[in-house]
Structures are given as structure tokens and as C-alpha cells.
Length: 257
Length: 255
Image 1 (tube, rainbow over the protein chains, first blue to last red):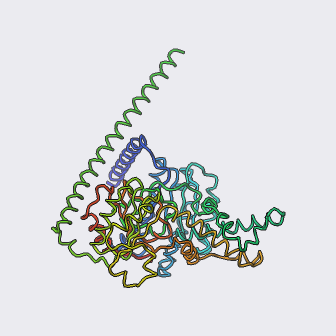
Image 2 (image 1 turned 45 degrees about the vertical axis):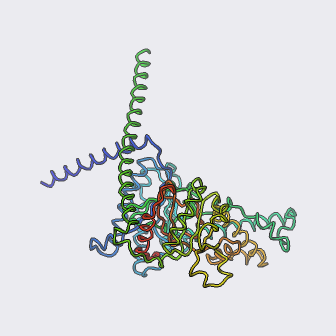
Image 3 (image 1 turned 60 degrees about the horizontal axis):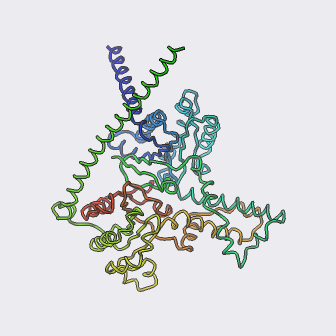
């Protein structure tokens, strides 16, 4: 009896998979987005609605995410970005933050394994955000995962942890200032600085053009991927919650219910 | 040799017809989805007429006080239709919205600023109210005009302001490296260069797609973004519905 039901499930699974591949085939005749970003929202509401335990919503959300990633890479989307953990989420109760960190650690370790989805599709993983805010084990695991997948080149997965757009912008400005300062110091010491360091009275005019937009953009955490084509927020909320605000100028925002 | 050539030609034809079939199927899917959205559009249009005639009870009372700052993003091509913009602003004034920011990428609305301010009753430029009597806020609607240069380019200018402070703080190399800029310093810098407007609670997009078209990134962290369709088919009922939906939103701000 169990064998028959197992067989039926397998046939059903194969049929669904075949139909999905057909749909992807048809859709590929049109334009395929290069970069899709996901805001994974509504896990706690989902768990509450189904009366699940605390933390169960996130586990279900994670398996839904894995399926989505598989479909994206099958479809031929080269860059996928996910909003895993915001700096604002640190405001939650310490127990909840700890359980989320534990879940993240477990899943990052899973990514490094040979048979994981990232190695199957040749995906290079980046962790974008202020990683210094994470606990040591999570940060080290993230760095290990980035190193382990560094040779993959078919697709890119950017996982935004400890990330907010405003923090990213300030960090990029900070890095640009430090880089510019280093450049000027080097120029000055070799005598070619033309006194740029002593910007006093005339400082305003020269200062206006020292740091350019391109300098800031190259120091963004998300400089590893082009601007997204679509941002999908699950749960139907219509805000971006400090995610990719800089990169979404020409991006289609989609919030299905 | 001929047989291999024949096989190659047949494969070529199969690939060609296969590709044609896929394109046909794609267009079929496109037609079905377009029909779906067309029907949805008609239903929404009907609902907006019912709302403006006051038939739907739910929308009769609007807690507009929850909406402290509203932003309107318009596609630059449609921004030339100043009469539509003025009509929209008049609707907003009637609803009771006090502070509006008008944005279009190329700055066309900025160019028609004086014309718009003259035509809309009781509108004043944002920034002027701060110098004048605060009581003016009660009866007047403040209008702010923004464009792409108030977004990314303003951040670049603010970066230069911060860099000047960084240099002028005059410390040695070791001290400079430890200096960390904060978000509040960035906000201050943006204010100094004149791009430090408040964060809108709600952003209405009048254009072909739901996209904020480069509205200053620093200001839309928690802004609800709603797509209203093209400006030429704007409806009073849709405006009421969007504002009503906004007043019922609950935000956790990440908590």
C-alpha cells in the first residue's frame, strides 16, 4: 500500500516537474530577467495562522526559498538576491534573534556541502551587509561559504544579512572617503598633490567633485550584482523596508498576496 | 556526405519551427494574462466610480491625519500634462492632504513649479513655511518638487561634505582610519545641501509600472509604494482607495 502511494507521489512529482520545464521553455521565448530580488516576508504571520510553533514559520519559509532558487536557476536567471536579515531585525527579542541566527548557521553550513543547490547549479554565494554585526560563528560560516563557492561562475546568490540600504550607503560613502584620503596622501607624499590636503578657504569648489557617484557605487555591498529587474515581496506588503533602495530606481516592484 | 547534409537541413527546419511554436505559445500566454489584467482594470475602474459617487460605505470616512507626508512619482513623459497634475493636487487638497512631494526623473515638474503653485489654491513651496508663521500649515498645502539629482547625485554631494569634515578634523592618519560615519551625520549632510526633505508615508506612482523611478533612496525606507496607473487615466476613487488602504496598514519596522 505504502509502495503504491509512494509511486503515485513520484509520478505526480515528475509530471509537475515536466510541466514546469515546459512553462519555462515557453517563457524563455520572451525576455528573462537578469536579476531577481526577494524580500522574504510573512513567516511569523504564516506560523500564527497555522498555529505552528515559534520558529516553524521560518523553517517553512526556508524550504519555500530553496524551491524558488531552484526554479530561478532552472529558468536561467543569473543573479538572485534575498533579504534574509535586516539590521532592524536585531530589535526583536534576544531569543528570537538567537533562534534566527542558529537557523542561519545551520543553513549556511548546508550550503557549503557538495550536494547543495549552489554547487549543483554552479552558484557563487555572497553575503552582503555589515557582517561585523553578526555573532562570530555565523560570520565565520558566511566567510567560509563565500570562499568555498568562489570558483562557481554560472550564477550568483547574494544573501543580505545585517543589511539595510541606508547602512549600505553610509558604508559606501565611508569607504570612498577613506580611499580618496589614501589617494591624496600618496599624491601629496610624491609631491603631485598640489596641496589638495590643505583645503581651506577654496575648499568648497574643489571638494564638490572629489568623490564621484561611481566611487560610491563601487563600494556598495551589492556591487557584486547589477541592478535588480524585479523585487518580489512575499506577504503582499507594499514597502521596501530599507532593501535595495539605491539599486531599485528602474526595478519593477511586485507584492503578490 | 549528402545524407549528413540532409540531416543537418532537417534539424535546422525542426529547430526553426520549434522556435516559432514556442514564440506562438509565448504570445498566447501573453494574451491570456493581458485579458486577465484588462478585466481586473475594468473591475477597478468600476470600483473607483462607486467610491467617488459615495456608494461604498467603507470609503466615506477617511482618517487622512495618519498621512503626514505624501509623495507622487510621475513618469517624465506624463509630467508635461500640468493640467492633470494641478487637478490631482486639487483633489488632494480637497481630501485634506497637507504636505505633498512631486517627483519626476528629469525635473520637468520642477520647471513648471511656479505655474503649478500659482494654479493650485492655497499651495506654498515646502521650506517657506518653516520661515513663516506655523499657523500657515493649517490652511495651506506645502508642495516640494524633486528630481533625480535630489537622489543619487545629492548623496554624492553629501559624501563630499562629509569628506571635507573628515579632512578638516585635522587628525593624523591613524586617527582618521577609525572614523565611522553614522546615518544621522549623512542625514545632516543631506540637509545642508538642500536635499533633506522628510520621509513620505505613502508614495503614489503614476506611470506604466510600479517603480519608484529613482526617488531619493534615503527617504523611502518604510514608505508604502502604490501603483496608480497612467496619469491620463487617473481617478478620484482610486486615490481615495489608496489613501484608505494606507490608513489601515500596520508596520513593525523590523521588530
